Every structure is written in C-alpha cells, then in structure tokens.
Amino acid sequence: MSDAPQDSLEFRKPTAETGYLLNRLVADSPPLDPNSIYCNLLQCSHFADTAVAVHDGDTLVGFVSGYVEPNKPDTLFVWQVVIAEAARGKGLAKRMLKHLLGRPSCAEVRYIETTITPDNEASWALFRSLSRDLDTELNSEVWFKRDEHFGGQHDDEHLLVIGPFQRQR
Ligand SMILES: CC(C)(COP(=O)(O)OP(=O)(O)OC[C@H]1O[C@@H](n2cnc3c(N)ncnc32)[C@H](O)[C@@H]1OP(=O)(O)O)[C@@H](O)C(=O)NCCC(=O)NCCS
Figure: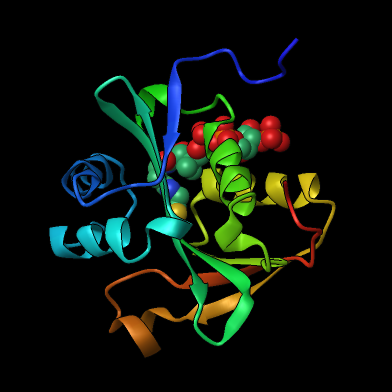
C-alpha cells in the first residue's frame, strides 16, 4: 500500500502563471507582508527550483517561497509560507517544507533559515515542529530591528536557524 497522503492536492514547481495567484493568496493572509506582483513573478520564475505551489484543482492553496543563500550553499532561506485559511491546521505547511528539502536543488542543504515576528505563533509552531521532525536544533535572535531597520514601521524580525540536519529524500 502507498503511504502517500490521500488528498487531491498537487505539489508543483511554480511558473510565472502562478505569480498573480500567489499575490492574491498573500494579500488574503495577514500578517504576511504583501509583495509586488513583479516580486511574486520573480519568486515563481528565477526561484522556482526552491519554491513549491500546492493546487487543489484550479485553486492555489499553499505556497512556500525561498532560495539557497548566495554565500551559503548549505542554507535554504524560507522567505514566506502561506496556506489558504481553509487548508490550515492539516499539516500542509510542514509537508511543503519537507517536499522542498527533498528537491535536487536542495541536495546540499543542511540548514533552514527564516525570519518571524515575535507574535506570529503559528509560524513559530511550524518551524519548531519542523526542527523536531528533522531531529535538530532551532536557534533564534533578533535580526532586522523595528527602529534600526524598519524606521519604526514594522515589528522586529527574528532570524531562526534550524540545523544541521541530514539530507531529506
Ligand atoms: C503559519 C501557516 C503557514 C501554518 O500552516 P499550516 O499548514 O496550518 O501548518 P501545519 O498544519 O503544517 O502545522 C505545523 C505545526 O504548527 C502548529 N500550528 C499551526 N498553526 C498553528 C496555530 N495557529 N497555533 C499554534 N500552532 C499552530 C501545528 O499544530 C503543527 O505542530 P505539530 O506538528 O507539533 O502538530 C499558516 O497558518 C498561514 O499561512 N498563516 C498566515 C501566513 C503566515 O503567517 N505565514 C508564516 C509567516 S512566513
């Protein structure tokens, strides 16, 4: 018997056609910072190898954007994770992150980095749970600061570092 999850979700590498759908999904998902459509198009094209789009029929229900850090080939930076409200709480975000780690583009990856604001409990819970599953450490410190970097316009962003972990297949 297959142990694949029994649902109708399709995990895809995004294409430029996904960019506008992503823009709308993020806009509907506070507290995420919306990006320009142009930025979303780049995430879905130049960075498609390190992004995953999940579709349920014609609907985009989840997206993880990221890239391998230019000066750290062993580190996947997760830029944004977004799950449509109706699809939350079913393990989808964690499945998508593990899916990315299994891609050939992440063959050298042993660390994940991401940034989270202090009050985004769902996001902290997601990455804590992922670090437990990967049987590794999670360390965090304030990185981008409200006054120093955001001109007082945005909460601090804490940098989370998860790893090292074994290659995921
Ligand atoms: C954060 C978000 C991506 C989580 O997606 P999800 O598919 O519901 O998460 P999962 O079901 O994979 O949950 C992973 C873990 O986080 C926990 N978790 C998820 N949402 C939670 C919440 N609101 N409160 C507490 N824990 C939560 C789950 O219980 C699970 O832990 P477990 O494995 O120990 O049981 C989703 O809530 C979302 O899109 N929020 C709006 C956008 C956002 O804030 N994105 C993150 C910033 S990059």
